[in-house]
Length: 264
Image (cartoon, rainbow, N blue to C red; front, top):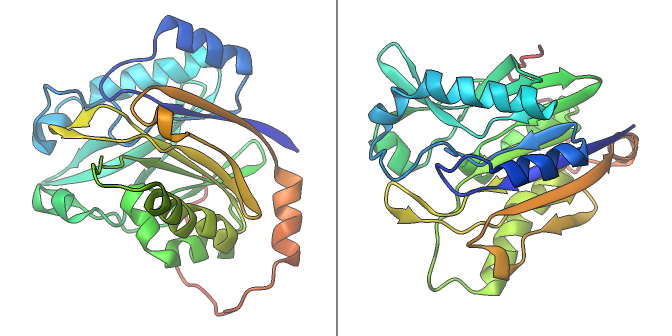
């Protein structure tokens, strides 16, 4: 089974242009993934204000999924629930919401500003493909990749914002991509699609280092010249091949993993 995935490295708070939508539509993607907090622009200065726009954001993203006739991993948005806020990623298949995932490990600055951690592993079966979700800082917790392996995820989408580091070296960037994403793909026995935003969030500049990895190596990634600009990464993934990899892959640690699984 072959599927087409598109990683849209967009500028924060800026909707897709007509040219970009036409280009993506022509790719006929089965899945399109957006960055973490993609809809937030420079006018939104805190998470509570961002939460007020949740319904507006969701309406736009549902329309985008329908317009492009694809399953949209809709980046993330701030979702209010009672007196709590969550960093939530919605999965929208051709205009219809089919699930959501709440980031389980918000980074310290998120916790300090009111983002609560989610609790559950999330997978959804989309036309025979088992899709898992993680968000940004979740990748620092290897057990989440191990859980994805235990539940046989085929593709893991990871909406991300990556802070710009003026003193960053190429070797440091390559190390992080290998440590948290390429090694994660191997641990999970799954394809990994990391999607970054560019521009700023809450006044802090970002760098876009989007990538698509397989358990056996990197398939494509944004080069250093494209870290500050919009980019569209496209890859055709062989689901049968990754499932065959999992059957043959020998785990060093074969312990049972107990976690709530959500299948929709």
